[in-house]
Figure (spheres, rainbow, N blue to C red):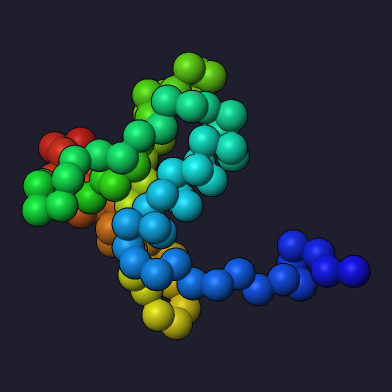
Length: 91
């Protein structure tokens, strides 16, 4: 019997589909329907593709969808977070 961990899902056909999958996953993970896509193509987003001002006391949760091949390193994530904080004048 297949399980989630032994299954292989097809790759999204485009970045818009990937953002939508990520949006839905965040809504489920945090049980929060307030998540929304941030901005439009070509518009400055300051490193944030999806966000929510949560109602469950966590505060603001933001996500950036990034096309990455191979291993995603902790340093790559830290660099992206630092760039977003700098852009938003929060660093």
